[in-house]
Image 1 (spheres, one colour):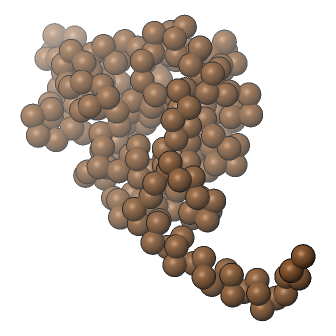
Image 2 (cartoon, rainbow, N blue to C red):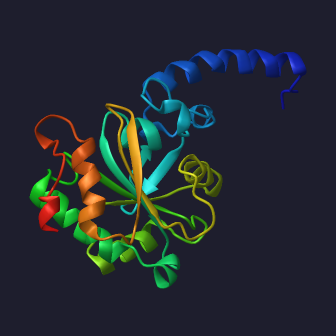
Amino acid sequence: MKKTTRRNFLAGAAAALPVAAGAAVVPDAAKDNPAIKTCPRATGGKNASRFPQVIVRDQHGEKAWFYEDLLADKLVLVSFTSVRGEEYYPVLNNLTKVREIINDRIGKVGQDVHMYTVTTDPRRDTPDALRELAEKHGADWRFFTGEPEDIREILASFNARGSLYGLTWIGNEKTGRWTKKPSQLQPLFIAEPVARLATGKHHLPFLVDMHSV
């Protein structure tokens, strides 16, 4: 067995650095390279420095880089819950109504607007558990879990603390603009900032005539 010396270790580490640095610019979650995974932040986006460069897994077992694949250059709605959390502070039934409004009045969820729910309990919430939760509530968007330390970084980037977090964040990483709304707020008033932050044909200052509400 070859003895590992300090010189050998440093030489190996130096050789690995260019690989990690190059891959961080154009990440490929399918490779699941642990050298890249330790990169604390993504690069190149409007708010890339705010979000962790970590791999997450959805309810179907598909992997993705949290910022590069899910947020960068996209109009997104990010909510937070868990299997147990839905028993104490339910948000998914309300968010399915938000999805319906988005589909009807703004654009297609999954193409024009991307909805994600991140678990606040990654130790318990496996992809299978999240799939059952999504199906139970008719939520056809992507649910994410991951390594507890990685999910903790994601939650911290949204100022989420504890297992119950009642805010939904809406953001457009093409423009770098974000806002947040209570997840149990009337669905129309969660969907409306999605329309306001949208660009091009999907942008709407209001979804209804406010004088008629």
